[in-house]
Length: 195
Length: 356
Image (cartoon, rainbow over all chains, first blue to last red; front, side):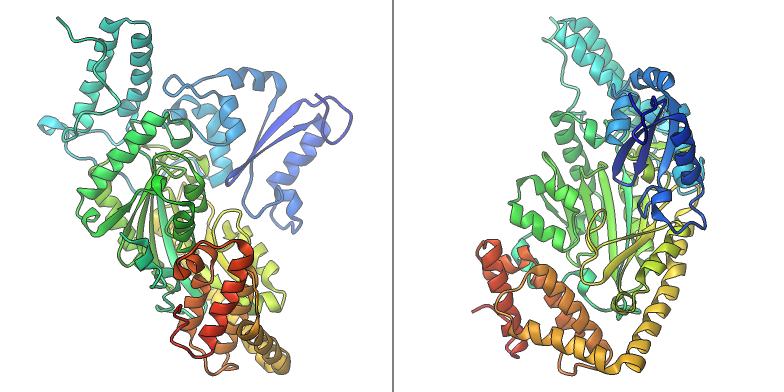
């Protein structure tokens, strides 16, 4: 692929993520350096082009083509989104992406917010069954997204034994997190009733 | 909730009350939240989408705040009704134009709105007239606590509340004020002001949020970052800059009166004249002219119009409102004729332009 600014080979593929918009840039080393230097120093610069052309602070992450090709294939085990899909649409697929793609997202997030640690409010967790306190983080509950997928796959393969096992796993987690909930409608009984 | 009954009221953002309401139209805080056990909206199956809608609707309606809210199934609304809610700032354009199961819960005062299946599973919004960010924050915090005790919001100790777009992660908070800045526009200082806001990480948007044009000299100022600061700090970050902007706008207005009395008087009188006599007029032109007349009234250059009337016209002349008030659907050409008729009737001193 050619650099979009000149005829040289594009070696840097940059994803710009502004509020609500994703933009891709393909640049040679020289143009990438110029571009990245501009993006990093919008201070004192009244030319809006230098900061990505908008009023929203852009974020920029550059990778070499090889790194990017490898990274693009990486997929979240819960929702199945690949990093390539995220780069294209600018929206993540599920809460677990923040864990699975943490290494890739961290510089991106630090760039947008100038920080990489939440210091605000924490969620109010209802008491779980038998007085055990639920953790602040919801990683465990989010695994239900992946379990639902494997249950559906098992049903598709007519492996009802497996599907039932996964369903019970889902119920166990949901009973802890949603003790007063009606049964999750997303977990239908798997397969025919046991005899 | 009958949407038609809403059309008779102006809604919170144009109530025209509250501190500094000559310049600050409204103060708004919104929180982005997601349910931990489902994929984010753009990755949901139709089944997930329906499940999340039902899950949140049930949990909201059984909370004590939910009992004061009316739920509207946005997925089943006609386009004109969705547009109507957008004009009242109760749902976003993105939410109106989306597909599939989605809804909004609104309180009778139109201060609180909870959008289900927007960009995130839940977007809580709280809007107060005039400059009252603290009041809006206190109210939304209460709503968030109530819903959050029944809904396991996706949360990570390091990243905070997890959102579909990394630009909202952390607090998920967007604090904004809607300002009417006609004098800064006329004196061509507005771009300079925006550039300096950008440097302190504040965003400027038009009337209807992201990507919308600044119509009628109305601008939304909001925080750009959501991670690494507490909600209170972010409320303050926006709140601190508002008095400065108010001061700039007031000084620009004084300057206009002092230095260009005839000019500005001429401009607002002409705007008033067009609104009273036009035979066909677009929504954009109407908003632009009403903006100038609004400033004229505040500067004492136009005597016989009330600010509350201008605010009410700002919303009632918008496309969906106009059609709701008229009771029929109209194409663009007929809307422009109807809008002009509505304005003429209103300014003739009739009973607030009641349709007859």
